[in-house]
Length: 160
Image (cartoon, rainbow, N blue to C red):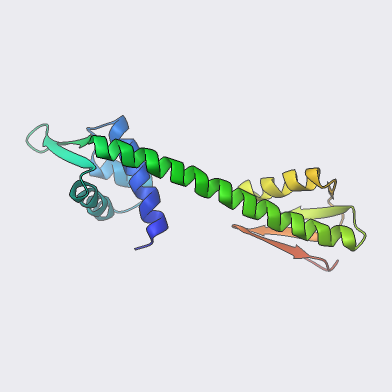
């Protein structure tokens, strides 16, 4: 299993359980967009690690309780998540800055930005910082955002 998604799921599970100890595995699965079996597997792991305990609330209903170790783990996971996001931001910004330097060296003062989302927003901010205008002009280099990738197209014949 992907450790990055495990990490994110465990953080989301701990936050959800802390917020609502009576939450069901079906509700957790719906919140995270995964199968109930996946939630069950993660909860079993959290229990084995001592981060969560189970109490029977009613005959068929369980209550999840986060242990002090679980609260500590959630805090560490949160800090790790924030650090990962800042690192991603810094790396993306640095890559875009390097690409914009190439644009400036080629004599351009503007680019066309293709794509949307958080990475495109990082591109916009970096353009502003580097005094590069964002244009709809088809005769300028294109910064294309695809997921987490930013690709520079210097050729004017870029079509999309």
